[in-house]
Image (tube, rainbow, N blue to C red; front, side, top):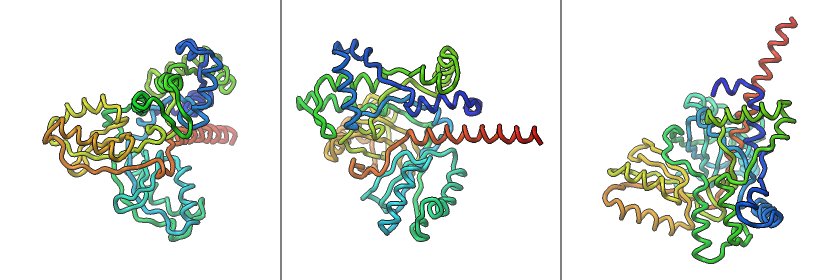
Length: 364
């Protein structure tokens, strides 16, 4: 990873692929796979994007976890005045480490930020610098820029399940059960569901090699080899479409849950891996809790039934639980892509700065 981030041409490719700038839906491929006319597919795909049911395709960036092995739950209170709150939210949406932020009515604080970082030392330095950044760059008042907070650390190296698009199974199940489904004001039909299933699995998506060659100045064969190398090293992964809120389908409730598993831990983990309600899970050590789960549910009632089902299936195995419900209305920001692109941009700037210094040294 460290060597890769010192190669400017690879970084330029990554920027175009992770942003989605050089990634397209292959309409002809989808048309053949689904047996529908290309124009029908094109119109339906655009509606899914325009109604923010799916995001446009991007290459995944699993290498981000190598560089940022910490997931941090940072809880704090928003500033008191409306002016400071607006400025604070602008910072949240632009910060290069925050991938999701929610208002919360549970616990001691009113805001939850999910943050990726390199290590605890760097995170603490970052936190110490925040009041100055909030005042100088975002114009917050002295009072608004200083806040109390609570921090919990988890390891991105201890993920037991990573399937951000598992919510597509809930969407399909709801559609079949009801015979209809409307998301973000857009009524879906069976063709929409089939298109979504294809796109979240990465089918019918391609890199735009002409755009990549133009941006890098490299030959197509060279670009293909470099992308193949990035994929082989698990720095990048094949392109897919995601939900706009990353691993939460539109209109669904996100649950952020810590569980105490007393026994049958491996059996429960195997169940979690197959569970469409759980897109992401971690092994953790946090007080009495040893499992962290992000879940998708239709409602709080749906989640309660889901939890009860686990307790019945694994009697006396599940102890205490700490559940936080985060509805779509509570979302302040949800954009993992900004973290990856900020990392890539910073590495590119560092390389260019180093090259400039070396040139000036040669000329002096």
